[in-house]
Length: 380
Length: 167
Image 1 (cartoon, rainbow over the protein chains, first blue to last red):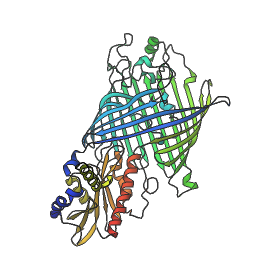
Image 2 (cartoon, rainbow over the protein chains, first blue to last red; image 1 turned 180 degrees about the vertical axis):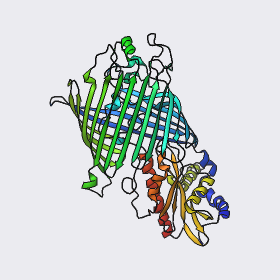
Image 3 (cartoon, rainbow over the protein chains, first blue to last red; image 1 turned 120 degrees about the horizontal axis):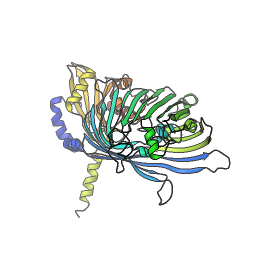
Image 4 (tube, rainbow over the protein chains, first blue to last red; image 1 turned 90 degrees about the horizontal axis):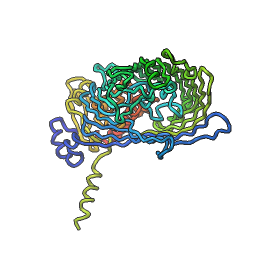
C-alpha cells in the first residue's frame, strides 16, 4: 500500500505516527533556540625594512550569541576580544560588545531593531568576518574614513521593500558622534561613543538602501547628526555641529571574477569651531574610496576544485583633508594612497588563509611604508 | 532499580528525533504551504501526504496524472532556521523552491525570484553548489550556502525514498 494518505486521512496519520515520531506541533511553534557562532583572525605582520621583526597577534576573537524567544522575537550579540588579552597599564587589548540588539519581526518588510546596532554604512562595517574580505587587515579606508566597527545604541527598522524587487532597507535613530574626539589623521573615528554611557544629546539618523540579485549587490548609505554634545563653545542644539555622510558601494561577482568598491564623502560642518575648541585639525570634508578586483585562480588551474584561491588587487585613495576650514593648514600627509596585492585561499567558504603586500603612500610623501602580512580567519 | 529507566527513556526519545534539517524548529503556516503549492503546480490540485522518516512529503496530482513531490524543511542559517519548500516534478527535477519563512537579520534576498529560479530544472544528479551551478549573492553567503546544500540533501532523500519504493 502506498504510504500516501489523502488529505482527510492526514490528521489521523499525524495523530498515530506523529506522536511517536515527530515532536508535538505545539512544541514546534514555541521552540526557543540559542545559537553560538563567531569569527576570529590571527595575523602576522612585518613592516618595511629587513631589520624590523615581524609581529604576530590574535587580532580578533569574536563570540556571537543569539537567542530566539519566539518566531518573531530574537536577540543577537557579538562580544569581541582584540589582541589576545587586556592588561592594566599596557597598550592594546580591548573587550567590547560589537552588537547587542533585540529584533521584533512583524513581517518580511518590517523588523523593529533596538539596541547596540552596526551603522549600515559601506561594506566592511556590517560584513566584517575575515572570510568575507580580501587582505589580512581590513581596508584602511574602513578605518580612517568609515570608522569600522561603527556601532551605536538606538532604535530603527529593517526589512525588504514589498514587491519582490530585491530592495531592502535599514534605518536607525542612534546616539551620535562627539566632536571632541575628531582629529585630522583619524577623521571622525575618535568621535564614536560605541554605546558606552553614550550621550544622547545629538541623536543621529543613519540608514541604507540596498538592491541585490545573484552576483550583484548595490548599496547607498547615509549618516546625519549633530556632534556638539552640549559643549559650551559648540552649542546645545540637537543638530549643532552636524556631520553628514553619504556613501555608495557595489559588489559584483561573475564567474571567477569579483569586483567591489566603496566611495564616501563626509562633511564636518563646523570644523572651524571644532578645531578652535579642541585644538585639533579635522578636515571640513573627508572623501575617497577604494576599488578591488579579485580572480579565483583555481577556476583556471583546477576547474573541478571547490576550493578558491583568490588573487586580488585593491587601491584606496582618500583624503582626510579634502577641504579644511579657515585657520587649519592642509596636511598633504592625510591624502592617502594605499595599494594591496595578495592571495586568499579558501578551502571552504567560511575558512580563509591570507597573504598580502601593502604599500602606503601619501601626497606629502612622508612616512610612506610597506607591509607584508599573513593571516588565518574563520567564521561559523 | 528505577534509576536507569529515565535515561533509557530519554535515549529512546532522542533516537526518534529526526535530523535537524527536517524538524529543527518552526513550521510554516499550512495556508502558506498550500499557497506555495498552488503557485508552483497551479490550481485544481490533489494533495496527498505521507510521513517518511518522520517528515511530511506531499504528492501532488491533477486528475490521474502525478505532477510531482514537495517537502517543507528547515535549515539553520546564521542563527535561525530558514523554512523552505522543495517542489519537484514526477522525475524529481525541481519545479521551484520557495522560502516560506525567513527569520535571519541579513540575507533575505534569497527569497526573491531571481535567485530561486536558478534551481528550476535541476535534479538529483546536478551539483547544486554555490559559485558552480548556483550563483551566490554577496552579503547573503551563509543563507545561500545553507539553502543550496539543504535543497541538494532533500533531492537526495527523495531519490532514495523513490528507490526504496516509499514515494
